[in-house]
Amino acid sequence: MSLKAKITEDMKAAMKGGEKDRLAVIRLMQAAIKQREVDERIELDDAQVLVVLEKMQKQRRDSIEQYDKAGRTELADIERYEMGVIDAYLPAKLSEAELDAVIAAAIAETGATSARDMGKVVALVKEKAAGRADMGAVAGKVKAKLG
Image (cartoon, rainbow, N blue to C red; front, top):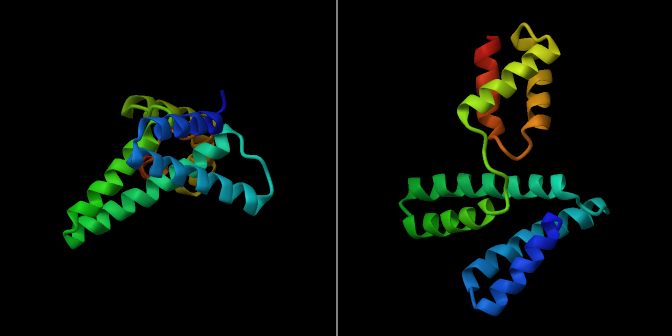
């Protein structure tokens, strides 16, 4: 079953189960996916759906940070709940050791020796760890290893 189909099935289950909060988040996910499909006039595959969901996660992380700074814990809690629902559709994150191994393999594969080669390494890691690593953290680790 594709990721889009799973989201649709979960939406139906949330409707039947009367889970209003979860249903609202699933509808937000479907709207974001549909918006990208309409904008680009394509049918998204699972990898592209993951990109959309990762973007939603990043938006929520940023919102939580802003709400916490402003002392709006009730709004931050809503965003955390939404992140939890979205997390259920994302693949398991790589551990630090696994991520370091992927970065080391990418550095070896690209033959990177300096910070100028960082773009090639990050692109390769992004391809190999799609949806399973925070790319901001990856860029920092790659820069530290090459710098």
